[in-house]
Length: 323
Picture 1: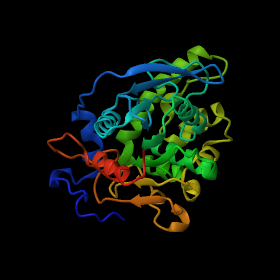
Picture 2: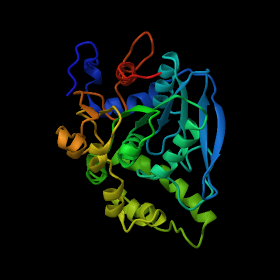
Picture 3: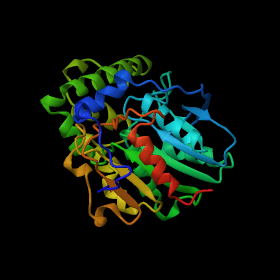
Picture 4: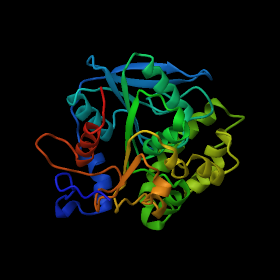
């Protein structure tokens, strides 16, 4: 557990609630950042990923992976990007398939274990000549980042210096059960509304493959992943998908210095998302669980505009040996 006096997170009393923390940044945070250089990257299966570049001639690059139904212009992505740019990094915030503003071209879209796409982005970035690359992610993007590093294991490129991940649902099955609770209905409804819109587009493009009739009866990720995510991405069912794509069993295989931060009051996460034993975490991953912070919250009202998560990320990165 994190116990630093200088970076301990102590929000105002009115922010000591996981639901308030989870909603506040979406409703009220605005991050001023120059427009990115938008490019797209072709995939081996004739699809495309949209990349937002913020370049300032640095020899080191941070790659940011967003959360479920997010994108590269969400406040939490822009907040970390702004902090990293000020610290002397170039930044690449990428969009998953279907999340870049246009629907992607293939029947598949994105999921919590799409490390093939993250690997393609990492390889593309390394091909630009960067000496050092940092990986970072929020929520689904945090799981994706840590799963990728766990899969890479000893084969990880020596230019990848480390990773930071916040609000990570590394136990996908457990987190799906948490979000299926009646008390989490408002979050589930929002996700399903956004996903319904995307699946309608998919059904129009691939009418013989995807059918959204009866979508309104879906109430949980179990039902959605059983019907759409699993078959579209080669999994047997939702539980097979969750088992193969949860980062939790692969955390001990990570071989670069990494930080995972999950707030104790996060309304999205299961007990399995709070591992503490080195047997689970391995030697290279540090886990911290502040008492407050919600899901991708960690709100802080500071003159420099940083949220606590960004301040914590910079502190961790600053202690790495990076060029």
